[in-house]
Every structure is written in C-alpha cells, then in structure tokens.
Length: 389
Figure 1 (cartoon, rainbow, N blue to C red):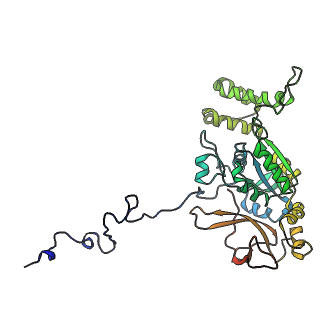
Figure 2: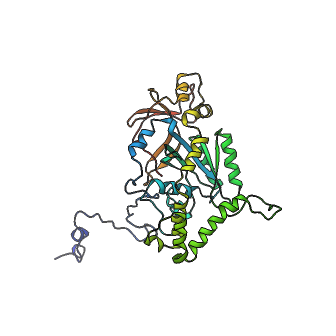
Figure 3: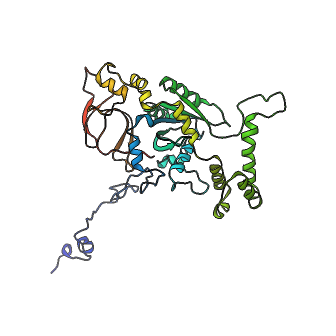
C-alpha cells in the first residue's frame, strides 16, 4: 500500500533539468512583478570603443619619440560656446591623420563623443583628450595634445580640468552667433589660469560681426574674397551637379571620382570643401607660433599649481621639464572610466622625471601638505596609455 503523501505524480526538477541546474521555488508574493526571480547578468557598458587601433598617417613609434622632445609638444584646449564647432574641428583633424576614419552618410562623425549619452544628446559632456602628430606650413611635425571640451555652462568643471594641464587655449567662435555667454566666461577663465595665448577660430561663415553696414555700397573684404566664393561653390554643388560641378572642379583643381559624384549633397560638400581648403597646417602654424611649449610655459604652470617651495630641487626640475631625474612629479586632474565602468584611468601631465609602468608612486590628495601627510597613499602605476579619444 502506497500512502497518498508518498505518491509521485510528476518528475522532480532534478530529473527534468539535471544536476547542473539550480532550481528555486518561490511563492507568488515573494517578489514584485517587475523583479525577476533570477536576475540576468547585465554588462555595464556606456561608452563606445574601437575594436582595433585605427591606422594613422604617421608611425606610432614616431609619436612616442616626439614625447622625448618637449620643445615639439603643444598642449591646446579647444573651448567655446555650445554648438560652435569644437568637436567638428577635432573631427577634421582626426580625418586628416586617420585615413580609415570618416563620417558615415549625412551624420557628423563626432569622434570624441564616446559616451552613449553624448551620442544620444548630440553634445559633449566630458572633456576628451586627443594626441595627434600634425605638420605646420613648413612640413615640420609637432605633437599636439588637444582637449575637446564641452560647451554648456553646466560642465565648466570639465573645462577647468583641461585648463590645468594645457599651455594655451584655442577659442572657437561661430560667426553666425558671435560672442555669447560661455565664450566670455571661458575667455575670462583662461586669463585667470594665466594661459599666455588665446587664439580664435571662426567655424561658420554666415554674417559679419559689424552691426551697422558701411555708408557706401562697396562690399567688405571678408564678403568679397571669402563669403562670395564659398557661396558660389555651395550653389553649384547643390544645383546641377552633372553640368556645373565638373567645370567647377576643373577650375579649382579638385578631382572627384565617379562614386563621389553620385553622393548626396552633404557628404559631397564635405569632400569638395576639404579638398578646396587643404590640410590644417595653418592651424598648426598658428598654435606653434602663439602657444608656448611645455618648457617655455613651465614657470607659469608650476607657480600656479605647485604649492611647495620654488627654490627646492624638485621645483627646479619641474621648471626645466627635466626628464632625467629619479623623482617623478605628475599633475593629474581627470579620471576616465573604462567601458564597463569598473575601474578608472588617471589622466595627468608629467611635470618632471619619467613615468614607467609598474613604478611605485605616492598619490597626494588635495589636502596634502608637508606638515599633514594624512591625505596621501602609496600606489603602483599600471599600464600607460596615449589617449586618442
């Protein structure tokens, strides 16, 4: 005789799923409907990354060798108001030095916007550093550490972090809007940081800064020699492409392939103006002329960020950017998370000495002083990176 409680009507979970599967039996009201009984494994990834290192027009070893020559280095911050063309200008530099990187269709590249939130909103939120090798008008190569900073006033701390590591500022102004609130603010901030040179770029050509037209009927030089040629190129490109564009390209010395002639208007305009204006050697020449090297800017930079005595041996090494000393000094202002948001990468500027992977260092906090060394800890340097957005 088999008792009722001993009868087996259905197979057990062990018999159905096997010994490798863990089964849970819960009541109906044990958890809310929005919470699953078994939580899925979620991978936190909020940033876009390249699957492989993009190809460059220069050898990466050459970039590493330029780091040993501080006189050939320029640390520049691109700042300005919202949507004035800072990220678009960095895209132009990336397309010039990286042949495989280009905008897809009618969408902007926005290479330095690596966060999902930045791509969705269409504006920069974090200051992104980019290290490139650029040539001036004499074809001499320089190493540029460029910071693409956000335009909204709410993210002014990102601009401050970039200013602390840079030697000069390139102020980007949209001609159609002129100087706005954040343009004046970052300009005053750059002067407070004692950055010696402030350069200005005009990203779009729409209107003049002058509020009153001249009394006579003569056109301004800017309109006569810049605006009208650009308008004519734009009109003939947008108009009849089959008849007007070939003669225009022949006159300007621009060559277009058959596949490029069949493109939409916006990418076709981008290609034509890129080949019409050429490379950005003029921008490089301007920065090299007006923005000092880390060696020339070291006295101002050390006096503004170093609180110790300036007559010590450490201060003298920082003032000379001496790389051959054992004591290393690094000024860090920014932490960048990895794509999974598990760890952070520290971004800083080496003031003196040479930093190596696996080196033991002492991290000094904001409240550290020679009399109170509590705000400090010992750490080991991990891997060293060169930031390319």
